[in-house]
Length: 186
Image (cartoon, one colour):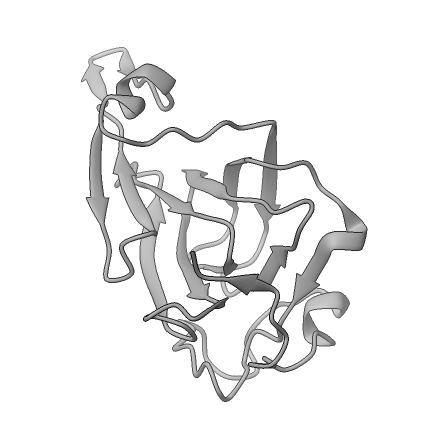
């Protein structure tokens, strides 16, 4: 497994090997021991899957705070997404900055978004399926969100204005509040 640090070093792009022949392919998409040998030692407690019928579907920006912080290992099994992580760890040198990667069934890349980051994605093609492992179980009381088009964050979502598809919950999420102190940089 190949691990690449992105512009915010806590966010990682992980590319599992994929072996193909005339029948199809095989890939070991998660190996605790192989990743631990490279310094990645996360423990996952839950797998989630989403399906988005339309291109331009935006999910996020979400996180969970203590005591139920979640890190996410995101991958696409059908279609493609623009996946984004925003550093919201107070005191971090990259506080309020974001990093993004295109994940697709074709490029087979995964994105690790640790706790302390907002996470969201936009589907680039119709009928996209996303699977992600999380390091903490879902806890409604710990859930937080920031509106996807917050002007302070100024994320360059790859969808024409007005063409996005959002849940009511994501559309009504509050603006980014730098005083929220949801996470502290360690």
